[in-house]
Amino acid sequence: MFIGREKELNILRELKDKKDSSFVAVYGRRRIGKTEMVRYFCDNEDVFFIEFTGKRKVPKQNQIRTFLRNIEKKFQNRVDRVTDWYDALEILQENIESLELKQKKVIFIDELPWLDSAKSNFLEELAYFWNTYCTRRKDIILIVCGSAASYMIKKVIHNIGPLHGRLTAIIPMEQFSLASTKEMLISRGCHYSDKAVVDTYMAFGGVAKYIDNLSCKKVLSENINALCFQDTGLMRYEYEELFASLFNDSKTHYSIMTKLSSKWSGWTQKELAKSVKISSGSMKKPLEELYTSGFISRTTKFGNVKKEVIYRATDCFSYFHNKWIKGASKNSDWNQISTTQSYKSWSGFAFENICHMHSEQIKKVLGINGVPTQTHYWNYREEGETGTQIDMLIEHTNGSKNIDIIECKYYNGKFVIDKKYKENLQQKINIFNEQTKHKYNIRLIMITSNGIEKNEHYGDVVNIDLGLSDMLGVGF
Image 1 (tube, rainbow, N blue to C red):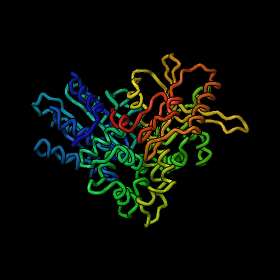
Image 2 (tube, rainbow, N blue to C red):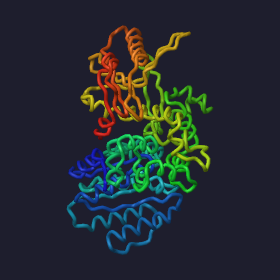
Image 3 (cartoon, rainbow, N blue to C red):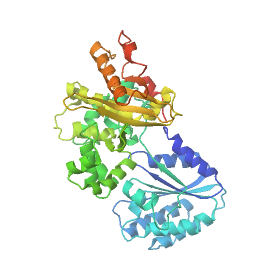
Image 4 (cartoon, helix red, strand yellow):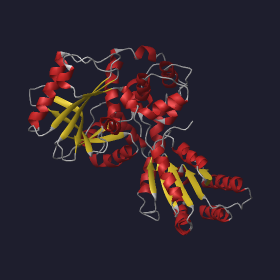
């Protein structure tokens, strides 16, 4: 059963209804569901569909042979053997010309970076095919797809050669939201509680293939043990392979992500450069690629005139791997680990990270999804004082001076605000008001895993409280 992706599918549906040919780039991390989304569109729309898939580290002649074989299978005729991409694409053109079909013709080229190997000239010939043939027709949708983000961004999306300005649409494939993850789990027969869905997300994020690896015959802890801690587990060595498949010079990306995953509050570019021993200038490209690929986020400190950027890892599996899988012994047992105080503390930060990832869904629940906003962090500390910090602050940028301070709490039972915690929240808001000259209208939003006790302290500080049912009920 196919789940979600309505935003991406609607882009393709609109292009299908256009009276011109379209050139689409689809990119995203490995296992995210790019190929499945395109195939689902083609299988459920009135289009002619032919697919070609590149093979990793395979010689040009083998790639061309496979390409021609696909043409023969689809068009049911024999084609000449050729040795360069110009002739191969010419054969594709001739076969498309032979069709008497009126519907759109979708040409899907998957794993484009693997086809465009060194000295293959594939991209140059594909550009020529698009510029001289496809643009003269009204019925072609050329879709190129790749997991290698550095290639797709540089060579396709920001191409300065013959493909410059040729793209009709760019479709970045992001992780599933919590709501879509729950929907996918249910469709596979995994009837998890809302909290178990969030626990799943903390380990695997919203990566379609990772979720598909789960066996609904096992409880979540058994799945995590089998996938992440056994030598034969599918996720045991995924982290190391992930970056090598996505980026050139992947050691730099690996080092940056490992460092970012070590601290929830994030790092500046200067701090990162110093820590991983790379020049600040050399950090720019890998940070941009990690950001574009959905592994990290960029936030600014509220009220900071310099707008210094803080980079934070947002990829759940990266956090999970670096905290629990990396260096784990063969005897590691998730049933025991998940009951430790260390895990309880870690899961609180992981839940906060998930809330950051779902800021748009939170806005929708709050009824402000139409309001322009920016998400910041904020801290203040005088020398010799403890200081205070707000990890998630939603600023309404429509001139209203409204600000929502988000507090996230992940507990097995109902969260209870005691006198000490209430005073801590009040002090946090008071310090913020003092430092911002009382210019803003403050709302305190509590997001909890199992609800919040509405005791005598609740009404003194909390304006709105949200639960997991709110978070899992909103998907984009």
